Image 1 (cartoon, rainbow, N blue to C red):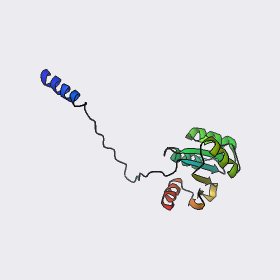
Image 2: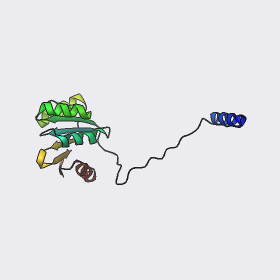
Image 3: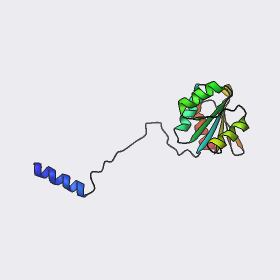
Image 4: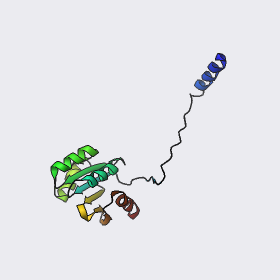
Length: 144
């Protein structure tokens, strides 16, 4: 019995070792899509839970994400907790220029406008996406 075991192991070794195949499936109700942007700047009127969720979703795509906000202390805290780059500017154009200097020119700029929802600027287009983060990102992907 030991001989058979050793013979099988030697054959496996000659063949390059065992190959492990893992089947990964998505949970029900999950859609997986490639995120088309590599650099995103979020400008928040008030960095709150929605901004934190938005940053989490964006950083999980592998994109370089920056956060600028009117309340610098809150924006710094949220950016650090979510793995985003803090951009210490309150003016949108100055924040965009600073982010471009630090990381890269943002391909997408998202404005988290509190109760007014999330707005996206892609090139010359401006899209109103609503206030729910998940639905807003899904709308964004289908609109572009």
